[in-house]
Length: 123
Image (cartoon, rainbow, N blue to C red; front, side, top):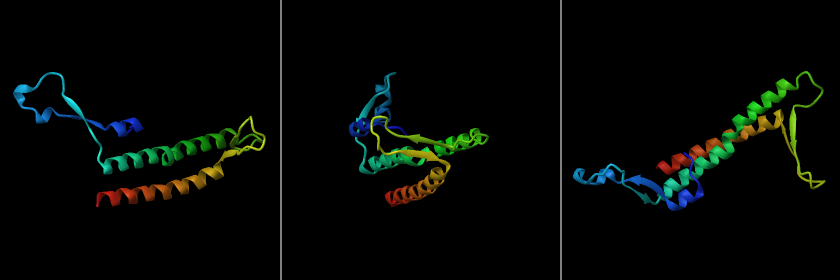
């Protein structure tokens, strides 16, 4: 369920055709904007967080697998470094198979917490 912040703020689009009498129906569907409930807003936020943080681990796993396979015959380490070209002592992010394993564990923990939050919302 992809929604931008603006969509959440403006609300959701709902059909009002079912509420109209059959004789007044036109070929063009009639719609209106309806505010999200607080629960729907929280669920949208949880889904967005899950997509951005938890689901990216699958991409990382595939990249790690690719690096390991492609560099197996090489003297190079299977990793990618991200750093700023402008700053000498900038923070470096090193993407390697060790970090993937750690992130997998963290992603599972976050997923469990998100599931608990969803269960609490359903009560």
